[in-house]
Amino acid sequence: METKLLTEFYHLDEFRGIEGYKKNGGYVELAKALKMQPQAIIDEVKAAGLRGRGGAGFPTGMKWGFLPKNNEPRYLLCNADEGEPGTFKDRMMMERAPHQLIEGMIMSAYAIGSKKSYIYIRGEYKTPIRIVTQALEEAYKAGYLGKNILGSGFDHDMDVYSGAGAYICGEETGMISSLEGLKGQPKLKPPFPAVQGYLRKPTIVNNVETLAAVKYIIRDGAAAYKKYGTEKSAGTKLFSLSGNVMKPGNYEVPLAYPLKDLINGLGGGMKPGRKLKAVIPGGSSAPVLTAEEVERATLDYECLAGMGTMLGSGAVIVIDDSQCMVDLLGVLMHFYHHESCGQCTPCREGTGWLNKIVHSILEGRGRLQDIDLLMKVADNMKGRTICALSDAAALPVLSFVSKFRDEFEFYVREGRSKVRGTSYAEMHH
Amino acid sequence: MAFQLSPAGLAEVKKELGRYETKESAIIPSLYIAQKENNGWVNVDVINELARVMELPESRINEVFTFYTMFNQEPVGRFHVQVCTNISCAVEGGRELASHICGQLGVKLGEVSEDGRFTVSRVECLGSCGTAPMMQVNDDYYEKLTPESAMNILRGMK
Image 1: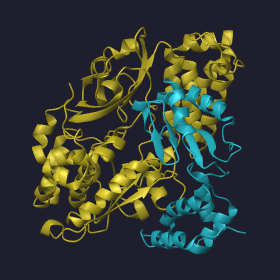
Image 2: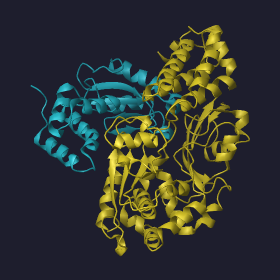
Image 3: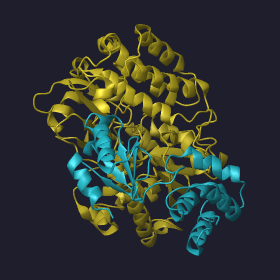
Image 4: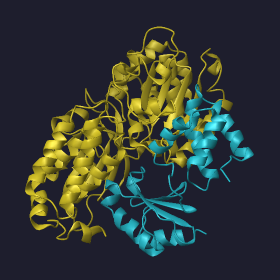
């Protein structure tokens, strides 16, 4: 069973427009929040234990608390650059409930004292861009944006910014660079964006789902929100289930939901005649779990961290026994090599070499020592760069090779996939 | 003749120039506007025109242009068919779909078909993983495809 807190009305087409949204509880909490002290909202979000839903899982209230305590202008930036392979929840949220995001953003902006915000949406998401843009017009017309919102004296302007195809812009400082009209290259931290972000002004970057959740924390209170999940992983979360499963889709469940129940229950289980082989639990950057590990995994930050992987963006990618892990690592390495922004040497060169080595194995030119070379290159890429993309490329390599080493050795020895019995060329050309 | 923005395109770029805190933020939106007016791709003439209109160095426009994959550095067909081949689509046949489409249309990846209608590209995750495999044609997503359904959709595009 899903626990539909954010997604309760997503099945209603009318929820997309402002009238239908208001009919179903929309903008009620905005009025409530604007009567609260901003610090009281921050305290409530902190007490609720809300953590960033985009991937890093950083406590939202704590992030807000890093802002300087003065009147310096500050920006709120919504990260809607959803690019982590396997993730498609923010797209649904913007398409089904654009006002929910806008309301959560206005409340959050009020809490942090920001007069201007942007929703940075990945360029490929033309439909969400259109729907959110239209919703912003409605919100302005209804007086929820602009000057003196609902007579509170609070002014706020919000705009949409379209990305143009770069995974790295989902990294918060890469996104800031992009919004500033630069290449989307991440910036060295510190200073953190909360201190020096967009145009060197204090900036808070939060994911779509994080900002939308603020409404429900204000509606029900921190204590009610914390009833879902665990002490360290509070609330509900949207999981994007994809891959070799009968009923892929977005499902909202309390954190700490058993992974196997998501796959076999809500997800309808494996396809006929197929067995579960592996699961990537938090987007392509998260280390892979074996079928045996899936049995004991729960979908919360601490359990997955304890198993050497991460909750990430909540993208659960299911891999069945017809898939070749060498082949799939090739897919991932092509991706990270393509998306490395190029400014840090270990990442720029490392992703290139990882891609080359995996593909030389796939093309039948692999040597046994290449398997250790993969591990060595990946190991050298960890924790040595400005942002986490380098680690994100290294972690899948380390987990794929260590957990499915037999498949890699077989491929090198035989020049073909242990699973499929054919070579890469026969599989894909 | 060198590329020039249409009066409407020029007005749109000017609007973007006043929309953000700094005019540099208008580079990405303006590249979209110019690319659309230049049959879907950007060349040095487009860069020069934007630099002139935006009063920015050509190199500033160019560095942004070459960084982002949605700005095309080569001509593309009227219908740009982008097939996702990242992991969730790969396990559901995304790569085979891309090969099938290329074969049926008689083009290699990145080429423009003889009639100028199609260019097929393999792209990274488009956030349609629960409805794999998928393709994006110009602005629109087509999901839960089979080789047959994809070709039926593409054959209908004139």
